[in-house]
Image 1 (cartoon, rainbow, N blue to C red):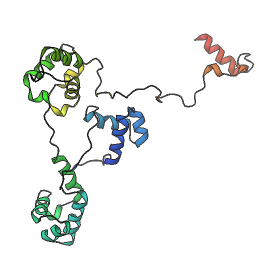
Image 2 (image 1 turned 60 degrees about the vertical axis):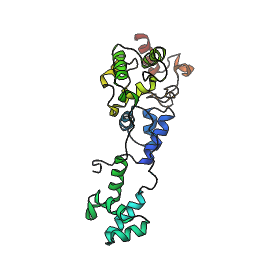
Image 3 (image 1 turned 180 degrees about the vertical axis):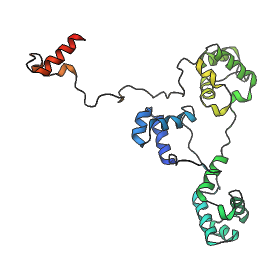
Image 4 (image 1 turned 90 degrees about the horizontal axis):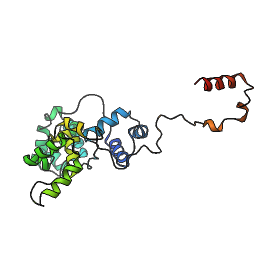
Length: 246
């Protein structure tokens, strides 16, 4: 079923969002750059735990959005399945299945069909912690004791040989914590991390030199005019009195 509700962010803007996030830009900077509120940026970033997702790719030979638009227009004209198949250079059975799985001839819509195809194509590979119960339980127990992922990974590396199945990188632990769709480690274990951040912070992410709610074109008090010191103007008296009172 196609997504309902308000129109979301376009694929082009999402790509720009992830490019800026990967470059270490803050939520506020990204929001100003792409014209969406910081809250929307945070919501999208949190879905992946702060990890930049790989670019989406279609399987070779899969129907494209342009193909689906041709199907939609052909159905509106009353073309048959075989006519559509010839126009697209596809098998008639491919066109038939495409239309059937997207509500039939009368309700077929190219955008909705393409959106459903992308979501059906998501088949994430199970991570190491999902397939190794003993390792998963060990990691969860150490996290609950306030061990850091780096400490856990380092201890496992020292105590278990390569190929034992009892080794895991600290990044895998972080990803299993922050990407809750993996369903591997409980979200409550995030509270045992030292940073207590809701997402994994990019190594390039820093607030140094960023504009963060500062006064625009601010002038330092050290650069005040010399005439302020003689307090000849009533307003200067008031400022001096306020400074002394403070």
